[in-house]
Image (cartoon, rainbow, N blue to C red; front, side, top):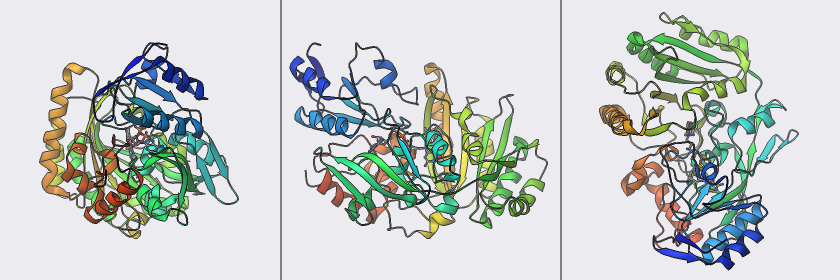
Length: 468
Ligand SMILES: Cc1cc2nc3c(=O)[nH]c(=O)nc-3n(C[C@H](O)[C@H](O)[C@H](O)COP(=O)(O)OP(=O)(O)OC[C@H]3O[C@@H](n4cnc5c(N)ncnc54)[C@H](O)[C@@H]3O)c2cc1C
């Protein structure tokens, strides 16, 4: 090992001595990965292939002790720091150029306590792995809408998933966390311990520290009525406006998403994905009008294990492709909004791109806006516009399509944006404030001043401390 050039938290160059590196390496139970090491490229690679950053060193942590040691090493050497959980950050917040990447991806423990209906998981776990363990006991909590997204980042920003209308967001099911602060101190937070921090962690992203354990409430979830209806794109206007009317009266047991995409056979289609988590007989009745509407090409709704619905969209969001997203909240899908989406989709440059509208409401909306740091509880839908492509030569046209489509949809959008699904917007303070909500942002600044006054954790939708 020789000395190493690295980047500091304020962007200047520094040199890490051979002695300091060897001491750090020797202190870890996990691995210290340097650019010349086997596995470096694999370790720095995130889900979004558009992100190509080269950390000076990667601390692949095996446990809490490694996390504490990594924070202290970064502090002592004033290093730029990125924290990686599941690696699904769209703008690539979990890797950095020239700094220390604190990689939690190998911390995969999950412990389910079926009698108390709780589950504890480490930050390298993804939702597929979490569900596998909890479903062994017929239990689940709200995760995302795919299996390979990390529990860590998703939970800290809110957590919108197929069970959210019945059980609330992922943050609404969070009971406690273990965390390492910007000073390398270990602490716990829950409704009875460090309560204000616990409030902020439920929506404030990774701004306050590194969470090393998440404890969730889990609920009985067995066979659900789920799957998708596929309609031809020429009927998208009628399908989307009917979807909106139907969604407006839906019970909490039902969570739906509508998406415009290109089928594997190359046909533009509009699909409605459903997850009815209740009695199958009642679900059949509830879903009847939706299934009888129009002339779907296919009705793939059936009683299935919950994990089936969780994996339905996986193939559309494979790792290794280039991604650029724009998102918004919406309350109403009317003729005009549906027509604009149809028109925009006609010029989509890539067969992998999609526009999806995920239904919110139900239990999400029954939690007070200021009870957690996730503010946007009153929204009807989360609109997720994803440009997805393979060749870097096509970057510009795919960026442009997403930006122009998002602009065309602005007049139908409500205020705010989902913290976890900000792309390049996270660079603008106004948009960050919109993401957290005005009063919530101020309260989060006070927490940031207390727990991270030097903005040690700033690769995230950043809450800027005023006390540093
Ligand atoms: C394909 C895809 C599908 C998605 N679907 C959904 C969905 O259905 N519902 C939904 O709500 N969101 C969804 N998201 C958004 C998702 O919630 C965010 O991308 C989230 O940040 C991913 O978490 P991660 O741990 O995988 O990411 P990472 O890239 O590892 O981290 C994301 C952010 O969290 C911070 N962080 C990670 N781990 C920790 C930790 N232990 N302590 C403190 N900070 C940490 C990182 O520093 C970074 O700023 C999706 C994203 C993708 C790419």
